Image (cartoon, rainbow, N blue to C red; front, side, top):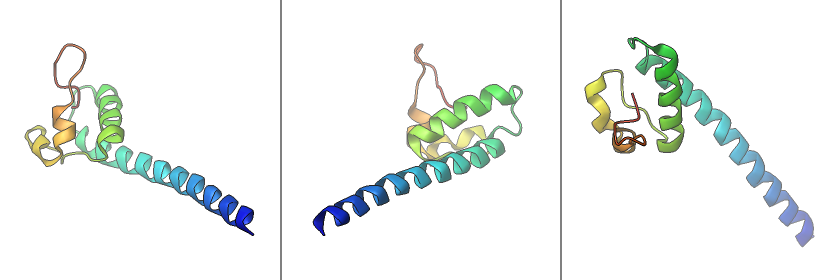
Length: 86
């Protein structure tokens, strides 16, 4: 009985993390698509926005000045010390 309960809980945990990752990927894609809609280099913007979104679990609204809406997103720096997130 205990083994089946432990197995059920373990499987539930694995499945819930999978669905969370899938839903987060969808969230990041749509939020970044909106944020990068006015970018000159859309593919590059989407790449970095998605990376930042997955690390921070949030994306500021479309305007570049709104990074204060998601502090983690606005505070991330690249290896040169420049802002990483578009």
